[in-house]
Image 1 (cartoon, one colour):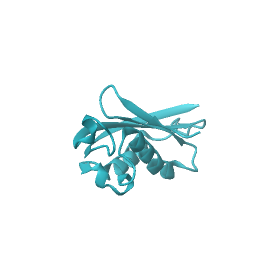
Image 2: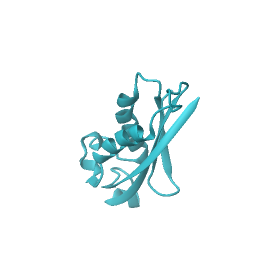
Image 3: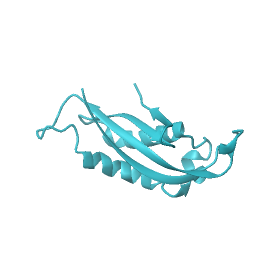
Image 4: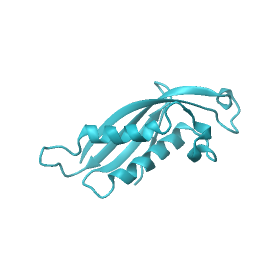
Length: 123
């Protein structure tokens, strides 16, 4: 099995509804997002997928939330914009673009700090 990944970042503000602590207050992060594809078959050039293709699609998805207040974003009005939920949202947004080909989406990781990250994948 082959796997490739790319990473990008976005900046946004949020607060966690129902949380008791600092994160219930408005604050922001520079999130780092890593997305990976996996597959068994390489193309004629010996690539699973061109890195620039994956990076371009990830850039389009992250542009939707970059420099926003995540709590106002439609998909986070009812669920907290936690790193876990952001990872799931990015995964589902990317999955549509990478289904049916030789490379499938493997996972999405979202770091809200240099040492804390959440990962989402599906079986």
